[in-house]
Amino acid sequence: ATCRHIQGAPLTVSSRAMFASSALVATQWASPAGLTRARPARASRATAQPVIAGKAKKAAKAANKKAAKADKKAAAKQAPVSKQAKDAARKKAAAAMRDVVSRQGKAYDRIVKEMDREEFREYILSVRHNSPEPVQQLCDWLPIAEVVVADKQAYEAKKFFRSVGSDIPEIEQQAVGADQIEGVPAIKAKLPAMREEAVGMAYLMAGSVVKDVPFEELEFGVEDWGSFEMAVDAYEVQQSTSKRFAAAAATLGVAADDDPADVKRVYRKLIATEHPDRNPDSSQEKFNAIKEAYELLSDRGGQSGTTFEGLGDKAKRDFRKLSDVHAGVTSKGGALVETDVGSKVEVVMRSLTIYDRIKTMFIARNVSLGARKAEKTKASGKAAAEGETAVEEEVAAPEPVAA
Image 1: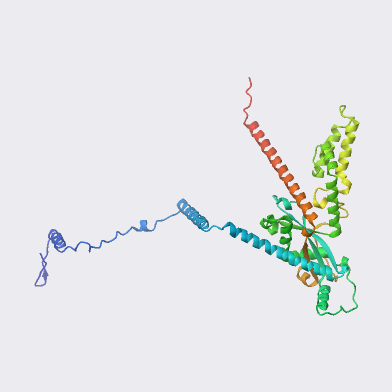
Image 2: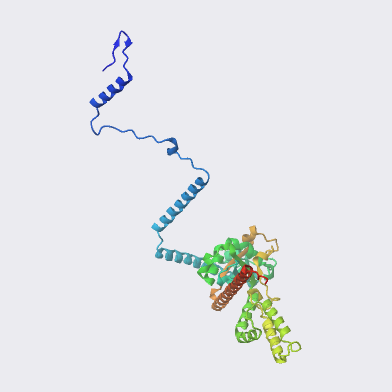
């Protein structure tokens, strides 16, 4: 059925007839199979762009973060670093450190050889791991390097004239004495710029554990050679008389290298309980043995210190932490500030590994001290835990019921 216009007026068709005609047309003129294009269903706005807020938003954010972390971990697993690559990197880093130490040692030898003795001073640089849980090799001060501090102007002048094969001209100038070269402030000011050299020296003495210690956790101390020799001699005396100290410690019931304050506390308790006038079961011989043992451990001929700073006669030792050093003067008498250290003084290091006994002596000493400290900390922690358990059990125990 079609709709015709007769004299401009439309011929109306009922709605039912129109729908029937439409269905008939669709049946007669249907598209060939396979050419019909179905329209995709349009998703509602709520389905296409879900609204996430509140706890759901936090959960989604956490899930995305977890997924990103998992992807990163998976990527790392896909490209693992081989053992050969790790070994190569470790060897390369060790070689670089040895090269730095070698260059410093050669410069040190040149200064000592070319300059007059009164134009430089020599010191010992020690390092300590300032941490609640230090590595054993650095739990106490470990000497790592010799440090020479020289008058840079005099050194440069001598190098120049010797390079041109000329004698150093005699000029009227005030002689520079070794006591005028304030080396400790110079070392303190120069050390931040010598970070690589200091770590290299520590690496050769203490081993690879140093590379895992942040430089900011390393503490440095300086003393002159004479003071350091006192420490070495004192420690050797302790080692040679270790049997006597062990016997004295056994008498008091302490360890030979316990802290002096702990030894003194035990001694006072024994003196009070073992005095013949107070304890009829004690004897004068036992009382005297306790006194002699304490005198030996507390004096040790001036070698009583268990720490590096306590070795030898403290009154004669001149060990100073660099954090406690104030600004000093240069060899020319002027004020020493960090900005002009490089132009007025020369500071160079040389590894102490050239002295075998020093490395062996102090590394073994620190490892032993570190092991004892760890054992003591573990024991105190265990005792504290047992005490807390006992308190909890006492609190949890039911109160007795009155009959």
